[in-house]
Image: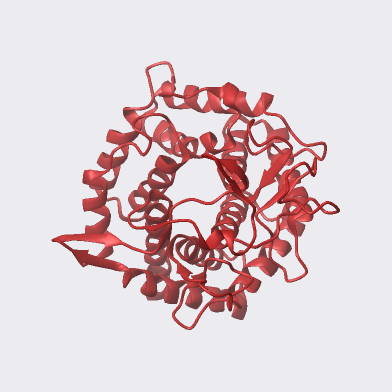
Length: 367
């Protein structure tokens, strides 16, 4: 079954992930649909996107179920689609909605080094997930409004987050607790214990998307080099199947499995970085080939069951600290206890993105 047929069927049946409130899971699908339309100009992708987004954005830019005072960085992600809808339609409500999200960032609590807290209920903590949720939006908002300080701040936050989560292997741990109050944080470094693949996937997409928005100059040079090193380190860990393990830095761990959402994120980041020349020459070709190999392997995970296609092998959720009465200690073993599901937005959205990038790469190769 072509992936586009799966995407179309998935979106026809898709309803708001949390029953209606504005959330990052829906944002993954919105981003995927936006890129599909951008690549193909197929009106069905725009129709799906408008049906979903317009149910959540009011006439004055109100966002369904959104409470800025939760200071949840996840809630920023879905706002990235507002810019393309505003440009396309000229409807002021989309930019007004983006302003609401920017207002949250203006008040969002930060650690002393300047990075946004992940959420109000996760105080003094920076998670790699949050870099994708907030910073590309902040950069694009700054470009749209001419508020260049927002762009400088986002670039600084990237560098600081990488500093506090770095490992000697060139990879990055899931989180950092400045307060050292969490038992998952190292008492000396504040770092969490393991490298979770999807956290690295969020990071890879965040860096590539941010750099894609900005011209290559002195302000981005250091971040480009760190992005290059990180992507190549991830490429070194790609399995023979084309996919990556759930616990990225411990492939031999008993029970470790190849996880679909992170693999889709890496495929997207690799293909986009290579296509845009963020990584060039033989290294860019290597990333392009690695991304295409991953996409082929992911397509094999879209299987027919009971007359419907399903994308399998997606970690449902993982985090750090207390949640639903459970304490997530961030050890390598912890990441293997979370449920594995199919058709989750956190996997389907990045798969859409990766497929869209592969179409661009294929088109360029044919020219």
